[in-house]
Amino acid sequence: MIIERLRGFLGTEPEFKKKFSEQIKDTDSLVDQGVLDSFGMILLIAFIEQTFEINMDTEELLNNDFTTLENIEKFVQKKLS
Amino acid sequence: MIIGIDHLQFSVDVLEESIAYLEEMGYRKVFVEAEFMNGTEKCSFLRERNRSMAYLKRPRSISIELINRSSKAEGRLPSLFVPVFSGRIRGERIEGDFERTLVGCCETSELVRAEPLNADCVCLDAGEGEGFLNSLILKTHDSEGSKNFWMRGLGFREEGNKASEGCFSVAFPKTPFSERLKLTFVENNDDLETSAYVDDLGCSLLSFLSTDLEADVGKLCKLDNTKSSGVYSFEIAKRSILACVVYGPGGEIVELIQVNKLGATSTP
Image 1 (cartoon, each protein chain N blue to C red):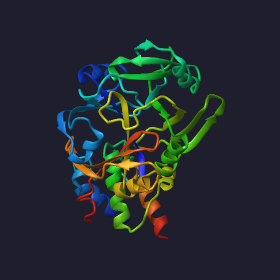
Image 2: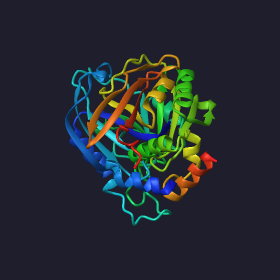
Image 3: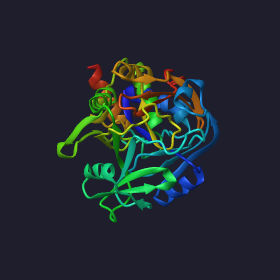
Image 4: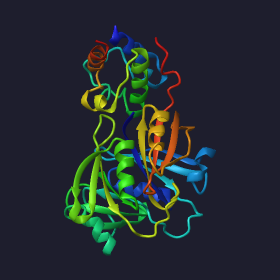
């Protein structure tokens, strides 16, 4: 469910939709695939915080790898639990 | 939340010469914007609103933004930031009492005048390695205020204290989108112009990426002796950006930028 919503966002948000492909695997790095850069990360964090009603801080950003869909899902699940 | 460093800015005489100099060092031009008109909110930080600019990237280095310096800036104004490169860069070696203090804060280094950047730069391990940019010296007239500003306000962490040289270092960690940056404070008792402008000659500003500009600027402005431009918006390289420039207590200028989140919150 979390990954589907992330995929939906990346596939429709103008910042990402030309760079994102459904072929990208959940374990692929969105940075290496050219989908995510620093400005994109700002948008992605805003989406995650608002959609899943969670707050992230700098420590969490530094201590987690937010570059794959799988890792973002794990992080969101942990925050929601 | 501040998620990293976006760029270090240099105000230069001739943009094309500075671009060529950086390309020689391995930087790649991302975009050039001619005659960019800054918003009125930024006016108190700029001598002239209309500036041309270029943005360059290099792997493993902090990105660099070049802007045309103001023709209204008289003479060479003292720049508070001194870039530290990991190897020798092209330029004349310079020496002096204060320069020796700067060099003393870094192991095996020398000071070089990089004329195309209008900046004095520390070069580590002179003659060896490549010129990566991951470190800065800040000449501050308020060390305690600056430490507070960079650590409490911007999220830098204590790195080390070389008390014998009068130096204190902090660092912002590497993130997936930004290189690590070490910042060393050096007390400067020179008669500095405390209200430097963004388009004064040399290394004038450090820019950060923020996910919540208003909250991050609010946090900085609660600290003593800070002053902000207020948040303004502009478009560059086809992106809508929000930004704010802030003076720190030591006279340093930082910029916080955030990509405009409009449209980012719609749930598919």
